[in-house]
Amino acid sequence: MEKDEALRQIKNEVVALSVSPLYAERVKHKYFPVIGEGNHNAEVMFIGEAPGENEAKTGRPFCGRAGKVLDMLLEFVGIARKDVYVTNIVKDRPPANRDPSPEEIEIYAPFLDRQIEIIKPKAVATLGRFSMVYVMNHYGLEWEVGPISVLHGQIFQTSNFKLIPLYHPAAAIYNQHLLDTLKEDFKILKTLI
Ligand code: URA
Image 1: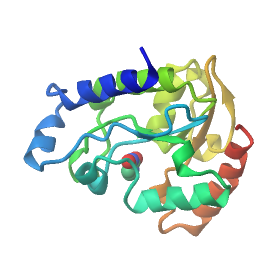
Image 2: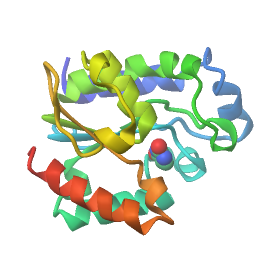
Image 3: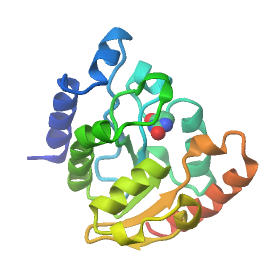
Image 4: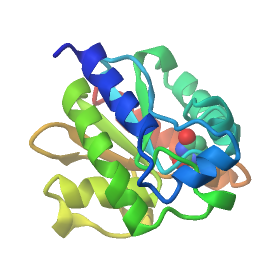
């Protein structure tokens, strides 16, 4: 199956995913699931946590305030957003931006795994703790899992891609120090492509 077709198939399955506890919220608020967006041949794939309100209203990942920070960081290192692929582990919005539950992660993560397998990025950049822990546990780095304050900006090799855990851009909205750290880590990410 072609990449576009395989990704479209994932979209169709997530749209129909009524077993998710977040599906009722989607229907109630007329939200969209947020599947992912970008280049299907991207060398870098960014993985966030779950859609916020702006994302659920539009169906586009990282299009709100955290997305503005992400855009700024990409521009800072000269990577075009159209060249990367951006997605989340959880594809529907948890109410009131609460953390995704382990059950929700378990329901949606197989779609993320398939997206990684189809796109085959050289580098995966996780944004925040949830996606970092999931990707490390799932791709053979379970012994390396630790606090994001220690692991951010480090490069880990999996059998398929290089992983670089990054802080979540939302954490840098009111924190200049974290923003500076993210800028340094984006320079490291740039060396992977
Ligand atoms: N935060 C996330 O983790 N993902 C988004 O798409 C938006 C905000």
